[in-house]
Image (tube, rainbow, N blue to C red):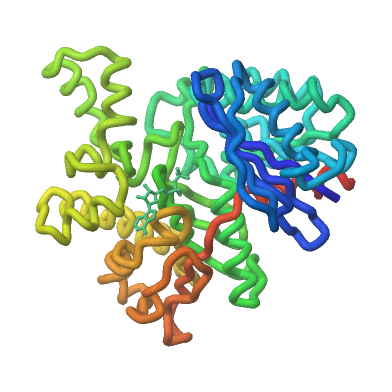
Length: 398
Ligand code: ADP
């Protein structure tokens, strides 16, 4: 069975076609600049040369149409006809409280997806545009929605309720939702596999460290707490997002700088985090180089980032009353030996002991603790597409 996985952003679209017999990627690609001049698709069929096809794409429907044409293209494609796509799995950022697991998309589900827009006004509309376009172009192919928030719906109220007047939860559904759920779920399941243990018996802390970063407490296979909240702004210091702040800072900045609500929102989301502290870059590669060249603010930015991750790891070990595995994933978690080492340094009291030599890897699955009586430490490259394809397969073959 072949499953097409679609992840639609506002002006971009990532896709993968996966053959679920053996879970092999038949092809994958990225459409860029949808609705902007210079749109193109970068397509890569396994075993063939990569191609870039430039074509004017006014909207997401045009983009999906081009992807489908490319998939069946005689020269660059991976399949002969659209009939060979058995189902489509769509990534959806926010499922609110309505979806605690993936669902088959029908008209009723579409209605609820539209209702979730107000919780994620930037992310959900392009996800929905992708789904609408696919439903139009492939009306008889089953579609599944897989939510970034769903994995965290197992949190208990004491972890998801904010200390605000309770009616804000009742009226506006203001609560912690958490994000990156598909990634936290995938790497925690894989960690259990690597340990050859039943995930039900394990306490795992997963660190998804990328442009956006979050930490998750996975207890017995369920998310019991996570650092992102009502939006992906809460928690760790990130590339450009502030993460946790004293909320009183916000009206104070607005008053002092005489800026509007939209401007402060932009400041917290786009100009803060390690970019804001360093004044150099949101990219950790640039910051590590700048630090090596003696830039003090680059070092400070990395120190703040590391410090936040450590605090969350410590908090989750305390609330789970123990830790069997610490997992690093996403761009920084998979690639930065320096950040992984700094996070683990000083956590020996939690029996976290990273081995310098084993830690000297990049972008591959590995165990980083040499002494097997200590807490397992893993690098596990995330694979949200595969997780989406698995959920899709599970639902459509029922
Ligand atoms: P996204 O949240 O956009 O999916 P990624 O998971 O791809 O982000 O992570 C992107 C980040 O990974 C970049 O900002 C960069 O800082 C970091 N990164 C990638 N490679 C390295 C590396 N070799 N060393 C340090 N950081 C890296």
